Image (cartoon, rainbow over all chains, first blue to last red; front, top):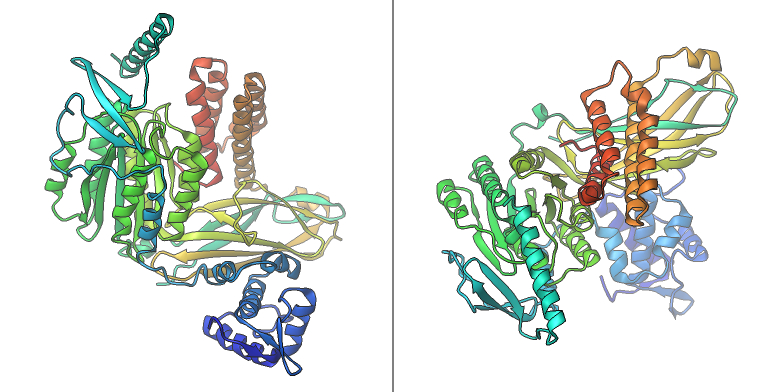
Length: 202
Length: 419
């Protein structure tokens, strides 16, 4: 359908009528026609619901896929009782893709791997550098000291301080040099550990 | 069998007073067919659990989470699918998506979960989503259940982005529910995430409640008869839509987004209309309503429509009509839900005095309902919850939990959900 031209309002009306009947869109109010006739299309053009034709062939205007989509969306939204003013807001300035979405949101069958493609695209952002994959099973009961992992695009080292206590250190981390700041860091660590133990009821 | 929800309009009194402009509360009750008529129609489940095993999940929480996952495996039918992704800063697919046929072997794998490091929540959700998406089944409920007690602190952590992505995945057929445990999880992330992703948000205060919430989530999935539910309201000429007390979000065509429909559970929507004065004896059409929904096993949306027509009568005869207490109750509960959101906003600004004042006012406005002889257990629970919040707002050490309660209880009321 993309790239197809409709010569004159009559051809555009005929194509829209065909698609509307396939979609089963029925208008309920007596004032709104099921399929748009030529007069209705001229009215939509004058109201700006359909963009003006860009080309002419003789005296006839040449419409394209965008115009057809605009017309179909107008009829769909009318079948949902939306007033013309609101429909104009929704249709005006929309791209073909946006109009397709407005038209087909509920009716279009889902493509099976659309969800997977989407999720894969979320992981290609720079927040996620390739990481070492872990075996599914068995999970090792305790990670080894000094084990390095890739997480969130940066590298972290796990350092055992004493049995039962590990620190996680990012590779670009530099410890403070001043004694006062070092002391403050040690205090923060001790407080965090106490809070953590308190929370677990120990 | 065709799923057609029943739509009822309930007014405080069956007629309206003639001769004056007025605001009318209309309770719209949307009820899908009950369980008996959908029995044997349980949709297949394609279920992916994403479980936080970061350090703070250690001890009882992890033990309860294992029990809950084990309970979940027991409830599945051999045609259902299950996957389990566990995460801290590293993500592991502990159970790749598979049919729930060998339950003992599946449960045995749960023993390998133990608590460890920090929380790569976003990536874990993506990986769990992939397990479900690889077996995306039309007509089935394709859902990820994310369970965490902490904050996303590795990888993508931006709340708005994660919420938008969850909505994006829902638009592609996979919904997400969330369970936040305790007082340290991010309610500003988990609750909007579930809401925008067609799932449920749950708050489990104590680890021992985890299994109960799991069973509510599963029962809800099994009873789900329709999703992508929208409500359009078209007032008649001269009538104005002044409010929808549920504060539902709107979609791009100006329709309200409603929760999924579950067999046997109604969704209550409270609509306020401004109606101009009418002469006694007049019958007036006030509102057209349109509920759009996608039945669980259908690919396309269906619509059910209803109109509200009301008769006007002299004040004295209207006053003599019986009052529908259900309408009064729903109005009050939704106003209280609003009060909770308002109190939360005051808390966020550090104004605890105002936050408490809002809750106190909601309590006193609710007293006639609480003291009514017909008060239901739900109403009594509402009273208890508001009193607890009023008291906890005097204690700064309880702020984190209080804010979660305000957020969560408001969410439950607005969406006609019970826990």
